[in-house]
Length: 427
Image 1 (tube, rainbow, N blue to C red):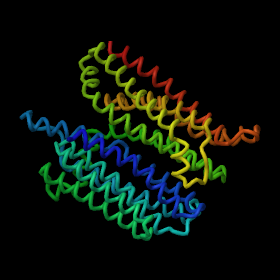
Image 2 (cartoon, one colour; image 1 turned 90 degrees about the vertical axis):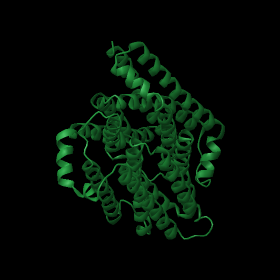
Image 3 (tube, rainbow, N blue to C red; image 1 turned 45 degrees about the vertical axis):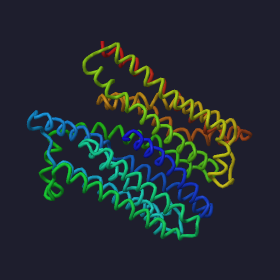
Image 4 (cartoon, one colour; image 1 turned 60 degrees about the vertical axis):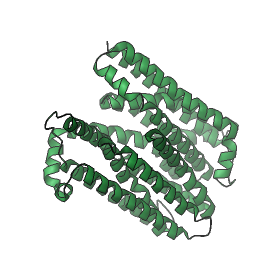
């Protein structure tokens, strides 16, 4: 049941990204929709920039929970840690909202619907709190309760979204989304409060909890934060650079579709790799070379299989999905579609490497591997504009997708080298 619930959650999560575009492209004018895509980029950056804190709290809380169950004695985990990290993530949401408001005031996001855009941002950014609830409840064996609750929340959110196409007001819809996510986050924190035996004071002891975090694992958070920022900037920077360097709405839409596919495939690969992580991490820590190498190769094969299946689906239905998703305003060329399929195979290698090394706590090596990918992603749009000026007969989308795919392929080669060294390093 837990596996089915997780798969259902993953499916609804992927559906949400496409559903938002499907609805908003039909109810917003072209200029407003272009601004909305920039808002999505701000959302992605804020949600992704939780610095790996939820992974850290899962590890610490899980170790504490299992140790208590086994009678292993007192651990260095303190409930006040949850309150401190909750405060930090809440501050991140507020800071993100302030950044969006400033972007609209300065004209970086030009819209005649600032209230709707800001409410939608906060509704989406609350996913950070929902992720904290998910990881913490998984650590204290409340996976199924939360997953079923989260499925209900996602279904309610989709209903509020699609109600716009049935005649509901856009403002009413986004307010409903905000209230649904607020209720989901509050329920998650209430479940955690009860299950972990917390008191109200634990949520408010920020000074004592902050001191404990600083003394015990601030270095882990710092390394994870640097890696997260690099990854977030690499995947989201083309949104801003395309908007800044060109007025080509088609190129922005092409990247938006590419980003959605990357996110969907990456999420699916992560769901499949998570099942192999217990064996991989055990083999690594006990220096079982053969088992580790075998499990790592199997994980890579599974990731490539997911990417290959996604590529086949894109070749069969990608153009039709693209046209329908963006209401027929633009079309997807075959050459761009083939380059996207090649990009996904490279993405699979990167995902396996990142997920496995992250589970092993190798944040430093991962950061060094991510920096070339960050540089390539940032340079993709300027290089596209320069090459388009020199070859005016070639489509901008084709040039962009070629450079962007090469960026992923180059990064994948670095990760292959890293995984080979990883296997040798266990010997």
